[in-house]
Image (cartoon, rainbow, N blue to C red; front, side, top):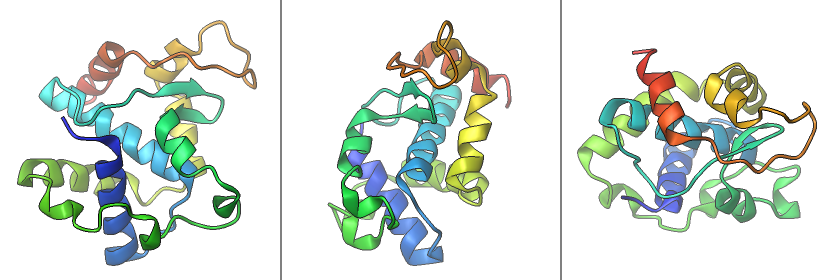
Length: 155
């Protein structure tokens, strides 16, 4: 299993070097979520360590949020300078890269807000927030079994 920061670094590298796609913390969070969701659905296992909580603005991994939560990112995008492991592509295997790229090809065209809205209409996030008001703080983890089942049904 990979470290979530390796997958972050790969996504940043791919989107910023190949296509220079705008990338905010919220967008990165959702892209990671969809990479993990589809991996669970297809392979029946997680790609990386780390859980997602059902926050007000959609699924969030607390470690990644902390990594990109400084004042630097309030008005600035995540850039290649934010990559920890510049050689991460050589550490991921071909299947991992193929999987991540397929998800990015489908989801990276959307803004962070659009991805947030998408996640708000999906059962894994909705189920985790059961009993919470729309703007109420929630740290309930999104159930990976529910996540896999929901996305598997979309195949």
